[in-house]
Length: 213
Image 1 (cartoon, rainbow, N blue to C red):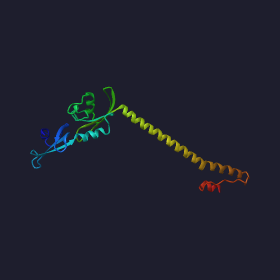
Image 2 (cartoon, helix red, strand yellow):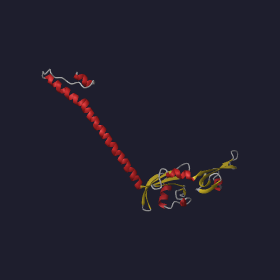
Image 3 (spheres, one colour):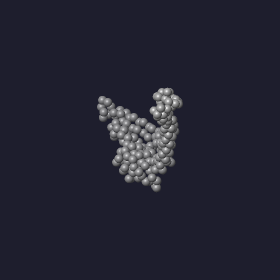
Image 4 (cartoon, one colour):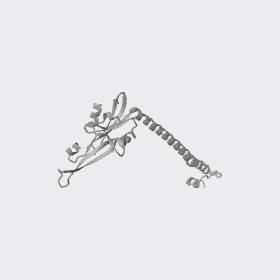
């Protein structure tokens, strides 16, 4: 509340904290504070807006795209402190990996590799202009490799299907067009040499069948 007053109408977000509610009981929330100033005299504060968001809703959104066994997603403030993280011990403190934190803060949006506690990760860092936060997704290399294998297998099946369809189309083209033309050419050659017993078996009603007739 004091920070909101000091910001003179600017939005202030809190870290997640526990809250006792008579409606829903104990829960963890993230709050937004903003002072409302007088329209006629902007220096006068006439009220305050407080919006509390259930932390569970955030964590559910963050864990859906990246399950815990495949990595993690968390939110970092512009000063490098953790706003939201699956590990509540990190909330409100600077992210412990200083090299990674520097990469996150200095490059607003980036993708880079990271080795942490013997596990290789690919880190996706996305800056949010509206709040100044950075959403950071750490995905294990092995997860990406598994997804790539699945895509590779799907592509191989797709290519095989295309080859089979192409082969069937080629066979159909040979039976429907090439063979009748060769037969027509053969019988025409007989006519050329005076053999009027030449006859073409008409199998279709297209242009080639018309020529045969």
